[in-house]
Length: 364
Image (cartoon, rainbow, N blue to C red; front, side, top):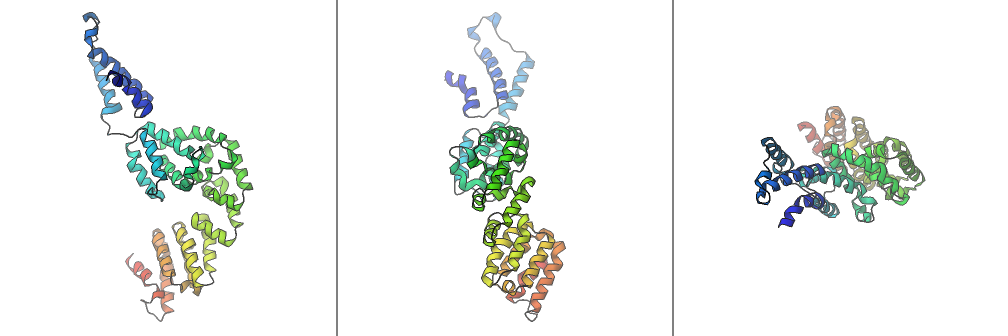
């Protein structure tokens, strides 16, 4: 029992990581004074330790601040749990879902020491010997890091800056482009990289063929202004099927114009439905009012789109995802449903009169 008591604080610091080094020092001083008071039989009366009231009050304050007023907190074991969570099939697959999950399960009750170690673990995970385990979960890994950065900004910046500045110097070329996924979630990382590493990343992107760019999810790095024009040129070099696949996998506002152009060129009902689901729906949340108008014009101008059975569902998704633009886009939507209704003899309930959109316009 004495051994456990003697080693308890060190265990809390080194094994469980429940306290910081500063808190450990404070608690050890309290422990030392407590031992002097708790075992007076081992010293003479003249040597009896009698702490001054101010010292006692100080110890009480520090004990409360370091330990007693806090709810149960997460320590080192949480690092192993979050690794298992990310690799599990049940881990959220959307950015918003990850934010809610990580905050509730880990960050809301995390000690600063855990957050610090979590930043290091997430930054390095893809580049360590067992990094292959995370390849299928790269975006989820990066989005988890981004949630930590958002929720614990001060700790994240303090820890991430020096790690980014030095760690990636030692990452070899075959793995360095995995950084692109992190850059998509946390563009600040680009500014924290050393100049030689930024030059290496740029050179690797220049030399990479399209399959390699897809393999490393390099187009996520559109979030970095220094790389955006270069990646857009790479995108333009893809054939149409490659562009459709990339847009569906990595929807970004930079692809909106090209996506609407491809959609407008649909040559049959099947391709209209395919393009609508693969291009228009994933990008609708990036639309401006002008993009909504261009999409509706594309539908009106191509009967293969306007009379495809899946187009009403596609446009309903566009309507929902661009709801914030309704004040600007209402005339475009109203003109669209009125035109389609006229084409069907004024029957407002006809399938291709888009009655659901008309109803939404009337109630929104």
